[in-house]
Length: 584
Image 1 (cartoon, rainbow, N blue to C red):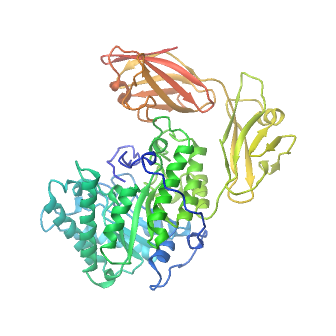
Image 2: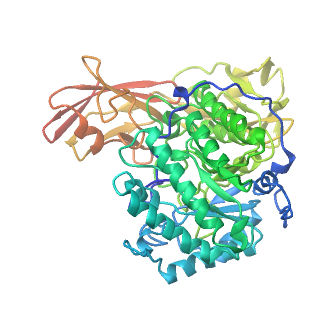
Image 3: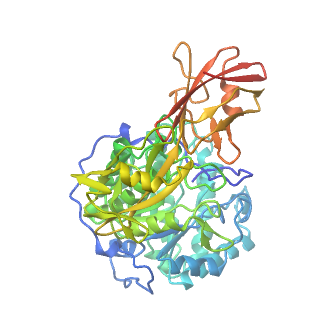
């Protein structure tokens, strides 16, 4: 991922340059089959194929994979972005958790002379080799690359063609020499998320082809195991648009080399991935974006025996323990569940992007920040799990409790019933099922709601014939209450009583119907960028980014949407540096 350091350790975000799936041509999904080679048991020893195995078999044996993000790729140093220095124990943990391979992103820029001969510091090269060797010693496959250099200096290739090409070749000459005798379980990756300043896609493809060609030539000519080592080649932006896939396929064909691997990245349908433009749910649009992504990969590469390594996947803004969650948990779980299935069907090896302590694995304690989330991701490597239209049933405290329905998504499984802990709920009495409609009765919900305190009153599980159960949170709420507020464009905190509800999104418009705020192409502003809830502090922050984007003396109408379905309308007016907010 491309990124810049943020003092609170926010995830490095990708750019909207990843073409949205709706803009890409529809590709018919080829028949779905599971691949035994991609099934990862909870613990495994050495499962590497022999050196005579095909590249497809080798990459299949790398499933699942994990990214040691924001570490050796951090700028300027290994610990600059909040993670501790990598240790052997880190890779011991990764291996014990079922991963078969790791991607080790490395940024070389700050450890390399910026002029010829572009010498990489010996201490840095030795440190990179030490880390790679620890992972290899654990029996893990390793993917080593050139990472944030892509936007730090490689992106200037259009205006400094010869200089960038010379530095790129010099960089790979030194890396290749250092690792030429490493085992073939080490893979080398040309360039992370290739991008080039002020270029069209056609021009960018040409530059990317030129760099991939130079990378291939330098590594192959360096001798040792590099003569036959698997080399990983990215599309432009590591984007899976058909034009980018076709361009890489043509470039690879020109090498007449079977030991090549394609890499692309996937962070989902952009509005859903960051919660902007109303993309609050893993809905049909988000699902189609995902299925189209894998269908194109399968049709272009894996169906023809060309391996594909999904070098990064996840959601751009989830998880992030340093900030309120942008994405509702159940929607995120549905995303990861389907991604695992689609990847298996397309015979694609997946590498989870993990920026570190605030996201998945706490690099200090070597414990998962959210064990249940990781359990769901881990399950997706080998099996489908049933889900439902939501993981919450909201009961208004101000109203009588009535029966509530959800749609079951069995995903090929059979619904087995509902449980509360070890107690099985009674079908017919506590719930009914009609087709895929699950209805909890008023009597059962009354019992589950108990004293009807705001928030989650009870948790029940929808269990299926396989995979993980789907948790349903019975939640009591009332419509949130906002209050008048005043402040400055540095940020306005609106006193808010959430009363058991959770914020989904905010839309902002002026009286003439135009959009208000920094996102001018949609009324729905970006979560945690324009607005952010403070549940424990009973506040709702309108950020400086949002307030400074407002027009002076033009009242903006804000509509806050909550997960219960409730909405609250609010007015905000900016006058120079002062801001007032009023309840409607």
